[in-house]
Amino acid sequence: MTLRIAFISDAWHPQINGVVTTIENTCSTLERSGHRIKLITPEQFKTIPCPTYPSIRLALACYGKLTRLLDEFNPERIHIATEGPLGLAARRYCLSRSLAFTTSFHTLFAEYVNLRFKIPVSWGYGFLRWFHAPAKRVMVATSSIESDMKARGFKNSLVRWSRGVNPDFHYPRAKAFITLPRPICMFVGRVAIEKNIEAFLSLDIPGTKIVVGDGPQLNELKVKFPETVFAGFQTGEPLAQYLAAADVFVFPSRTDTFGIVLLEALASGLPVAAFPVNGPIDVITSDKVGRLDEDLKKAIAEALKLDARDCRNYALNYSWTYCTEQFFNNLVSASEGSKQPASKSVHRLS
Image (cartoon, rainbow, N blue to C red; front, side):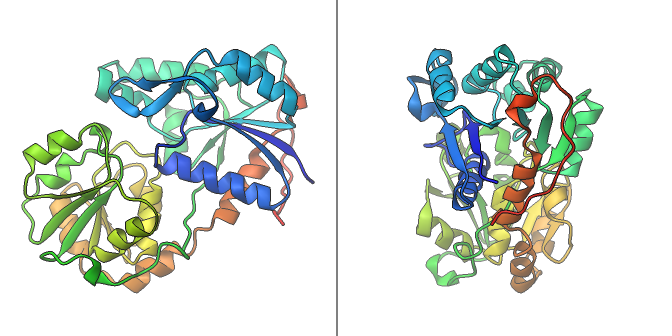
């Protein structure tokens, strides 16, 4: 069964994060299976920089053009990935035409907004409940996020859409790529307040701390932690080399819904040290591949004792093909309109 699938996302390049990685891999896997994908992102619109985070571009006055794009494509399935301007415009489009759609819950939006603008978390979740309420299904990455959403009053049909890793790109490589005192403790990701990087950099631990990435908090952290090596924004082969050359991956975030970079680290042979919170508790389910502890220093020390081969083998259980099959089977026919969700039938991607 070949379908026309519209995929709307406010998260896109130049952002490099788990949401963009998930969308790219899902869409490319669907296209290889013969489906037609209409990916609608800020690249197709006039944009402005997001306040406090200029690398995030927000689409301006997007409803008219989005309407034309969707009318021309005439999608059979519609998925709205984010709650930004494009997501709001797509939601309005679907409701005005009585078209059924699915959404996904990628980030702890309410917590992010609270950290950046001090808007109460309860207000943020009020907006999120309103945004997702008309969706036939809401896709979530983990069982802990599903439980949390139910506890916060989401009444939707919540379904699983996991994440994957490319083991042919992320794999163990030469440690000699980094010639600094070991152990090398590394964070890779956005250098932003919601990643809680300061909890890692403030630790008194042996060896070298390295931060790979860019973001609005970079200059502040450089000044505050001059002994830390800030490698800047990396992508492609250099990023894979940096990651594989470390000894432990430190993930101090308390606001991630999954953390694809955890899988990339494991596939590279790195054990993980993190707090026991949503995201890490769903990914690091074996004490052979990581340590989760409220004492992050203790978690790092224990993770350094773990075997790289166990980490690599664990990551191989996560494939983008399986994740994309989950996504595909969660979709609903746009023509369902205001009807109840159809019973699910399972399809395998060819």
